[in-house]
Amino acid sequence: MNKLTKLFMVGAFSSVLSVVPVRAGTLNFQTYFKVKTVKIQNNHDGYLNVFNGKDKKLFTAKRDVKTVYTTTTLNIRKAPSVDSKVIKTVQIGTKLKRIGDGSCGWDIVKLKDGAKGFVWDEYLSENNPFENLGRFRITYYCNCDECSEGYGRLTSTGHICYSDYTIAVDPDVIPYGTTVYINGNEYYADDCGGGINGNEIDIYVDHHELTTKNGVDYYDVFIKK
Image 1: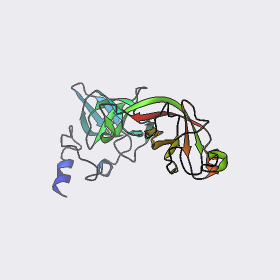
Image 2: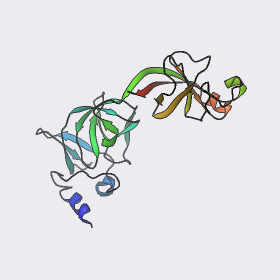
Image 3: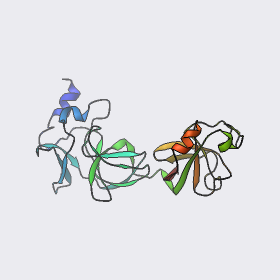
Image 4: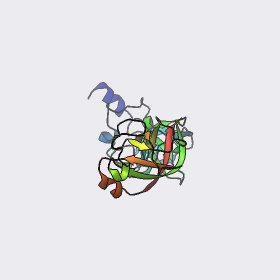
């Protein structure tokens, strides 16, 4: 057992785990605690106690209530492990309450419905880096004559379209050259079309069958501030 592993294990199953948080690539939390669901309790002195299913305390997290925002589409999990059950998946730019600064890089957050869960702290920011442009109607197009009226893979700005990356927008709503985030994916506004007006976006795909298979979606659309 190396020095870092010994440091991590000291007090891991005692009342308080007070070591320096361990980051990804160093140690896997799941390897040592072997749990997929935990229980979180206030201990009334500024800390949160985290227990496994048998009420054996795993660690104590400093209670640190702050408003934070997700920097990507993020899974909220029942326990501090990527193998744990997902409580909910939230969109990029979602506002959360961080109620515990946990160990091993996992923070405890509270959802609007009162549920508590764990997220990896590198995907949280105290300043919201994104602006929500609102709900958009999302459709799909390709380079065939039916979709692109003979323009092929060239955009209205003269660039080549890339599948699941190039989007057609109303440039009065989203300017050309804007990076756009839809349902956790990144796109680039580089095209327009006669049928795109206001809160509508057309996503370029390689094959016409995908334009009908994907149908019509409605998502909140984000850009970086």
